[in-house]
Length: 321
Image (tube, rainbow, N blue to C red; front, side, top):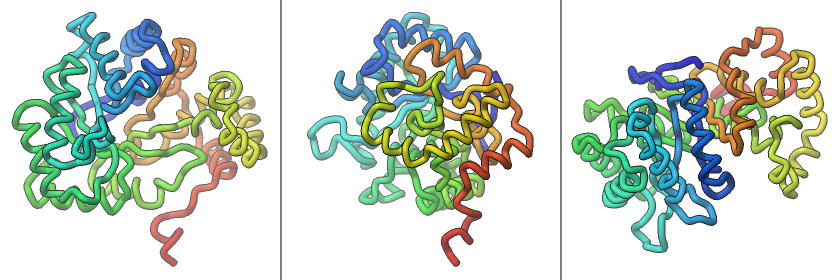
């Protein structure tokens, strides 16, 4: 495994981040525990979750599962960089959501209880809250840091302008500010290159990519989730991109690599990237991508991938004039 600094912080995290959204609702507890243990054994030290994850089992279920795994071996907590999120509705209560100072405090305390830990390494705002003043958000985050409940603050699904706004307020207050942005980014969905990634790089945020395999479209036959690929939306997307995906499959076959591996490796070759989130639903899926950090894609291969999956263009020229 290889490691990178989390943005401009001195914290080092693995290039592959283990996403846990499947754990509980799709992957049973015992298999989830096995995946977590295998990932840590393989050198993955970055684990990402969210307070809302849990699906049909209910919000908070995935954090609770992760807390049970951590409790099995007290030494595990010190070996991992633990990240979770706040913003999404946790109940029908009108105030049990968003980024008010009250909800941030209460949600953090609830996550700590479910996870069974004393502090969260990276506390991420899951989405922007246009009703919450930035000053209120930083007031809440400052309090959590002072209380020793969180160490770093990150964003997720933020547009470039919001990254700039939040960090300018942080700079004015003498704070470290955001250290990471977790956003949608993959070979198919490259709009983050227009504003989000340039803003993140300007302010020293590490970019963490979610859905690196475009919901399975970039996974190919080896690692694809057959269930998801059978949905109408996935069928339509696969049909619309049939030619692209066929060219991509041929390129990967010529290199002797799986499509999942190449798609993940491409992300790690992009400027500003810290980690790609993998969300294995089984031990086999985890094993299939563990060597991704070792894959080197030369300039010729990267150019071929750009030809198959063109970028939207350099910011801001791609849309400003």
